[in-house]
Structure formats: structure tokens, C-alpha cells
Amino acid sequence: MADSQQANGVIFIHLRTHSAYSLSEGALPVKVMAKLAVDARMPALAITDTGNLFGALEFSDALAEKGVQPIIGCGLRCDVDVAAPEASRQATGLKRFPTLALLAKDEQGYANLMKLSSHAYLHSPDNAEHHVSFDDLSAHHAGLICLTGGPAGPINQALVAGQISLARQRLERLKVLFGDRLYVELQRHGTEEERTAEPLLVELAYELELPLVATNECYFAKPDDYAAHDALICIAEGEVIASDDRRRLTPEHYFKPAGCRSGWRPADCLRAAAQKTM
Figure (cartoon, rainbow, N blue to C red):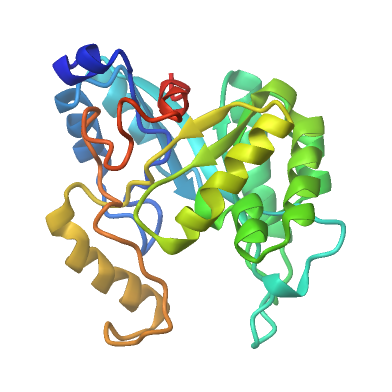
């Protein structure tokens, strides 16, 4: 255990990392992820690439070789509503959906994760992002741990839009499905959306008796990589860096050492959320 972790009494591991297999989005080669985990003295590390499991085997082998427990997951877009709200649609008509982070807790969970990710690619209509329906999730949820997805998740998006009742409805549906395998995800990358959603997430979690988990969504290795990664995002989405209306991450989306959870103070009332990563 790292000295900083011993001092704080908290063991933190990353549950939301994007490898280079998060195509045109992640900038962490699998071998680099393994080295970062070893350097940070993390006993385990999760991979949650967007929409695919392309890196699962390489990731498992690389981490096992270093003595680090690999956790296989995936960030899957999911239609969690009976009918998708208008807020999930772009002006072009392309249907967009929020993301849930799913982690395999056992062999059955990994099998279901493969089924869901394959279904998203094979059965999504041409006018929509690759996604699964709530019925798909209901049919293949066994053995999976569900994190609510952070700012891109269905709960955060509803809260930021001021739709608290919708957020509660979505969270209740997920709770019925996953039970004690559902965690309300908190992220602090310094964005206004995160600051708006956090107190409401905590309130809903306590109201519905759901555990909190603190995550840091990693796309690159160190803060100095932010500018290059921002250019990658622009290339992937056909945008220019000077554009105001485009997707942006922050320099905080890097692989932080266990003792460097920016914004998560040891005395913070949400400290237990960081402990839930274990």
C-alpha cells in the first residue's frame, strides 16, 4: 500500500479508465496502464472502454503479469427510459443515449458484458448511437456491477437538466435491477455539471439507501498530455480546437496516483465514496 494511502486510511483504485481501445478517445496504451498501476501501488485496476471489450484480453494479461488484479468493464450507452426524452436527441436527428459503467464481478458477468456490447453494435438503428435498451440490460444484468456513469450517465444528465423526478425514476429502475450491485458515481474533474449534480446525487443516494463511489475517469497518463488529447478529440469529432461548442475534457482526466485525488480531501464527508472503489 502506498504511504499516502496508509496515512489517509483509504485504498483507492481507478474504476473508470479508457485505454487506447476507446477508439479516437482514450490515449492510454495497455502496457502504460499496467505500469501506472504498479507505480501507484494499486492492487487492482479496471478498464471501461467506451462501447467495446477490444482490450480486455491484453489488459488482463498485462496486469496479471505485474501482479495487479484486472477488472473488466465497459462503458455502455443505454436507453434507460420507457421512451427516450427529447433532451437525448440532437438537432440532426441522431439519437444519443447516456452511459452506464458496467463491471464484471464474475464469469457470468463477463459473458453478459460480451452479449451486451455485441448487441449494441449489431442491433442499434442507423439513426442512433450504438446502445442497449433497458430490456437488454434486464435480460443480461446478472454478474454485473453498475456504476451510474458520472457526468455522461442518465442520473447526472437528468439532474443537470433540472429533472430531479426523472433522475429518481431512473435510479429506482436501476436499483430494482441491480440491487446491491448499483453504485452512485461521483466525479470531480472541476466541471460545472459535476458541481451542480453532486449534492443532488448524494441526496438521492441517501434517500434510496444506495452506496456512493468516487471515480476519476482517466483518458491519458499525466496532465501534460491534455493538449494532445484535446486535439485527438477534435480530430475524432471533426471539430477545431477554437470551437466553443464541442466536447471538452479537463486536465484532471489523467491517471491520478492513489494519494492525489484532487478535490477529495481526507476530511471530506464523502471520503467513504473513495473507499468504495475497493
